[in-house]
Image (cartoon, rainbow, N blue to C red; front, side, top):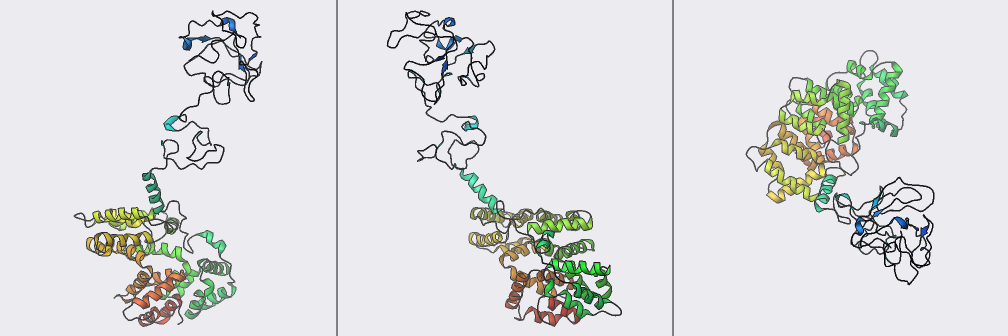
Length: 529
């Protein structure tokens, strides 16, 4: 194909006249236009918006034959407005602004093709590509921040109208819908908690919560606390009345009371309580005035420092907690103890249980708002069966990884799906395949997901009726529920509904405890003495 007007390059035959018979021959009457003057095709001036074509000097052009068009050499030309930006591109004509260095521009096949709206003429209309131009990796060449050109969804006849482009997989052709595999991965990511709001920290675990707690007037209570512990003896009734007052239901209100007492008397309320009280009554008061976060950390320190690890305390503090709470507990432990919590756990538990707690402390549990994905649940059910009943010797690490990555709703769905698929209870499978602390930890996570209120009731009843009674465990569980009124009310209702005697928790406490300790625990479950 010849370039546009190549047959008459440098010669201007009159309209309707025959072309010259020999190369380089001019028509009689033809006047040479000045060099650099704009060239207009036959028919008059250019169309609106069309740029004039710069005509090269005709005297230097000597074509050899009609079949060697691609090998023609063109002399340097004058371009106004700057050098050529790309092969076949001519900038706007503004005479006298730019003179390129000497050189030759070789014409390649298809190089000087007309673009829409540029250098059009009547003899050679612009060629429209049959497909959108392809760039690297199959994507159309685009500018940064723009959508691909010439790609319009089916039915959109107006290219100027705003278009919403579908999400495309990397390397897919323009307009291709997202791959099914990637859609499944997005659903799985949502199932693990990505893209959903994080579960907020529990009350008392984030200092930013203090801004939302209205200050209370503690002046009278501070004086009464000091009077109750001053001099000979201690007024335990006054301590119970003040510290369990509804004014201090919020952990940050309790922290204000403690801080005001310490500032008013230049003393430490916790040390005064330790010096004036004894036994389980002292333990319960300290657990209350420390607040939920510090009390959790103190329980962990005591559970790991004593001879023989208290696995019950570890489970109470670390399992079935939100990611935000786990991060707060880890940071507070590091602040108080000076090193990471996982280091102390590794020195006190076996390797399997250490692997479980390392997954918990990684804080990668699905957030509470994460949805239940049916395909993901079915896949995990299959993995659980392969890790337990489907293999000789259960794979505790695989089971722990699944349990610690699911929120309560997902674990509940996992239990139901396992029963439908294998006609066996997942709880029975755990009891059959595991023993000891690993069994207790997995069952606690599973039972809490199925019925949290009933699990809380059982965990209050078990240390209360155990022989010997584990008062510290009962105190910590009761105090943790004290800071969550809704959870405490649900646990009390479940206790009365599922206990063997059908008695309330208050009746059980009064039957098993006595003295000031009894009165304090009744007040902590928000019942009248």
